[in-house]
Each structure stands twice: as C-alpha cells, then as structure tokens.
Length: 300
Image (cartoon, rainbow, N blue to C red; front, side):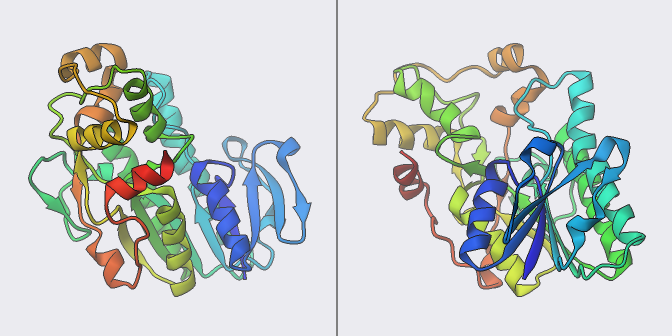
C-alpha cells in the first residue's frame, strides 16, 4: 500500500509517516521546498507550489489513499493577511489536488482530510456528535466549513471521503501542550478565562493511529478525533500542576486580558466545545489515552 501525505513534515504528519512505515505502508509526500525532497524506497518527496498551481503528478503514482494534513498554523496572531493565509493554505491546496486528480488517471480511492472541532458552536453544556448540524459563527468555523467543502469535491470522482475533526492535540514538544506547561513550570500557572471552557483533547499517538484506522478500514464520513473524556481548561491546568508538583496561586487570567494580548485568536483559549468520540469508538478504534492524567504523565 502507498499513501500520499500533504503536510507530512508537520506535527501530525511526521508521526503519521513513522506509523505508516511501521505498518509497511510506503509514503509519498508533497513539499514546497525542493531541499526537503527525499527519495528512498518507502519515502519519496515531490515538489508542489499550490499558489502557482504547480504539482508533480508523479506524486500520485501507485497511490491509493491521500491524507491531507496541510494547513498554516492557527497559533500565530490573526492579522487580516494571516487569516487569508490560514484559509488558503487549506482550500487552495485541496483544490489543486482535486483538479489534478480530475485530469489525471490514478488509483486513488480514498481521500482523508484533517478538519477541526471548532466547527461546532462554543458551549459549556452541549455535547456535540457528528450528527450535529449547528455551526459556530467564528472565523475558524468558517475555515473548517470551507475546508470540508473542498474535501467533499472528491466524491465527484467516486473517491471515498473521510473528514477528521480534530481536537486539541497533546504532544511533548509542539502544539498547545508545551504552552500550557511552561508557565506552570515557572510557578505562574493559572486557568484561562472562566476555566470552564471545554478542551476536547487527543494524545498525539491517538490522532496518528486514528488516521491509520480510517485508512486501513476504508472509512468515510465525519469523525470526531477527540479522547473519550474531555476536560475543562481549569482541570487540565490543575492536572498538569499536580504532576509537576506546582501550586496554582494566581487567579484565573481574565478573558479581556487574553483578548488584549492575543486579539481575536484569544477564542482558542477562552472558548471550547464538548465533543463526543463515540462514533470513532463504535467503528472499532480503541484509544490509547482515554483520560488526561495518563496522557500528561506520558508527555512529561
């Protein structure tokens, strides 16, 4: 089996490539840097420039599944121009892959796209499943809608489409987790905003294995990729502090302060969604990290 991964050098993509190799799956990957092109029997890079409409069609040779992970980080300040970058890095890239497949004879039968739980409205009480049709009114929800719409185009080519709505990925050195840990380690940890906002999290090992699970089982449709037991921001903060043996003596960081510092990006830490993973579990996936305490212990 051979897959094509876009975003293969990112946080999830790097680990997913390793997991694919463990499973005997060869990986082709797309890169915008010709210096990052490797050519080994099970790991081959191909150049593309999505904004110029350039892509090496050889990337699709013998590929049966495309895993689409590419997208600019949402953890940089959301200026007007960067908001455009966030959106285009997800839609322009996906559209280029679609247009290329539409005009190229390939063996691709499965398209698996990253997505986000931020499509669901912010709530401290409502549990969201994949059947919920309510959509948030935020910038990120708009991005996710357009991202998923771009992914759905592949159905026109008789390709199965799976969309992986991912929660907060907990990883040791990248993403949200180190940002949560650092102030607590220094003795300045505190819950953010009300602290009651939900963090529907998932360990890096699980999100990678979720992709493998969807790949191997040929699944289609929307799947919430979050651990079975979400926690509030306050509980996450307290669990990390307890493991580090640090006291939390500061009051919660007020929402208005976070908005002053982070601008519109503050919604990432002051709001959240309570998301169900039941559909994924019913498909046969067994989580390695069901509760947050073992996940924190593993990463620290």
